[in-house]
Every structure is written in structure tokens, then in C-alpha cells.
Image (cartoon, rainbow, N blue to C red; front, top):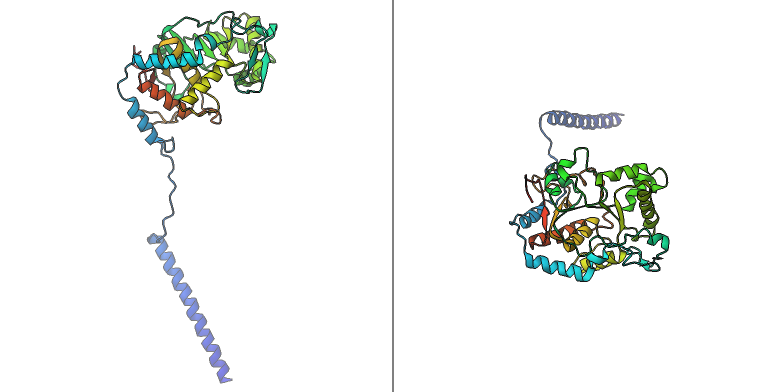
Length: 359
């Protein structure tokens, strides 16, 4: 009996010691937690993008670009003539860039540059939509401005400088009014239109067509350049655009890219090291301008989401932030090649704001 009592007392003492230990630990933890930061192993920190560098690591790349760009630009006539000669001999933009009744008669076979296995025989109806003569044949302009739609043009005050060019090329039916004039100008001699724009904004011209026609008045009597024969699905909507313009008596003049020229141009740029599924409209028009113009100036060509001066964030376009289909276009690689031509004095890139009377 006595032994059982001692055993019970011993168990009770052990239990009290255990509870006391827990109570002491709890009191120490509460005190320590309220007054002293407990020691913790520092977790691996993720480097969140800073407001001054929204480009997520491209600061070093942009610094390299600016270093190359900051050299005083001077046109180097020998380099320009040599590059222009290469383009002319291999791509023949003067005579081949646009389909005409002279270079593509009835019965000709057009091979789609985006679908090599697809072709189209030119019928009299399709032939009637072609311009009679090439609008560029044997004609060279002095100063040409090729205007991309990059967000770098936002608040750039480049409108007056762009409009001072003898020939102005714009890409993909960009908005020019409602305050944009000051920064991108209004003058237009040639504007391109991706058929996807006609599908998305104007219902592929299957319904009311007046909104499409009204939107074209911004561009006056310029040339409207369409890649009607790059992909099979481009052809019907491009032809409907040409018929619509004719039916409504719009002053703009629809013309079609020659797929043979686009194919030749893609081969040429591959020989220069460019690996892209499709060339962007910007580099296509810059290439054409180098054949047509004595002095080529590029505006709105900037593939990064950060401004090169000040590193503040930019939208993808000066009018919206819709992203480019990188699956098709190698934008930074294209820009690098254009920057190389800038450094060689072949053409001039404009990055940043424009000063009054700058050319």
C-alpha cells in the first residue's frame, strides 16, 4: 500500500515538472515575441521588378543599345549605296513590291508567301483589282519617314518632324487624331493594313462597311497596302476592302503586296542573320523605303517596355498596350539589325523626343 502511494506521488511530481516547463516556455515565448524579433532563417528573396525597370532585366540590354546609339549619327553614303544595291538586286522592290497589271497578267499563278503549298491563278475579276502601273517605278524620294507604332512615340512631339518628310509610311491603320497628331503627325503617303484588323474591327466587311470607309479618310488619298496573298484567308477580306473602297468612292488607293517580293525579302533578311517565322510590317516597310528613298528615318521602332531615356514604363503601342505576336515576329532581333544599319549610317533611328525643326 505504501509502495503504491510513493509511486503515485512520484508520477504526480513528474507531471507537475512537465507542466511547469511548458508554462515557463510559453511565458518566455510571449515575452520574447512582443519585444525581440525571433531569429529566423532568411528566405530566398524574389527580385520583384522595380518601377524604374519594368522591363524585367533588360536594363543591361538597353544600356548597350544606348551606348551604340549615342554615337553622333552621320550618313555614310558608301554604306547606304551598298546596302540599297543588295536590296534592289535580291528583292527588286522598285518593280516587284506591289502587284500590278503589268507584272501580274491574267492567268499568272500567285504563290502565297505564308503558305508555300497554296497558290492562286489570277482571274479577270481579280486582275481588275490590281493597279495598272507600279506606283514607285523609277521614282526616288528625298527624305522618307517610316512610322512604327511603338509606345516610345507617346508624348514625343515628333509629329511636325515626321510630317516634314517628303514621303511618309505608316503601319496597320494607326489612329492619328484625337491628340496624337502632335506626337505622330498626320501626313500619310502609304499606310499598310493587316487583314486581321479588318476582321476584328470591321467584321471582315461582311456587314456595315461605312465605319471602315469613314476610318480611311484620316489617310487622305494615300496608298492602302494589303498583304492579300500572304495567306489564303487574307484574300477574300482584302478583295472586299478593295471593292468597298471603290463602291464608296473613297480617295484612298488599295494596292496589294506581291508575295514574291515578300518571299525574296524574307530570304534576304535570313542572309543577314535574322531568324523569324514572319517579318514584321515595320522591317518590311523600312526595307522598301531603303530602295525608294535617299534618306530613311525610322520613328516608333522600339521593342522594349521601358523608355531608353529615364526608364519609365511604356505601352506596346502609342495608342494601346496590345502585345505583339512574338510567335511570328522576332522584334528585338529585327531592332538589333536596324540599329546596326543606324550605326553604319545607312538609315537613321529616332529614339526619344523630337526637338523643333529636327530632321
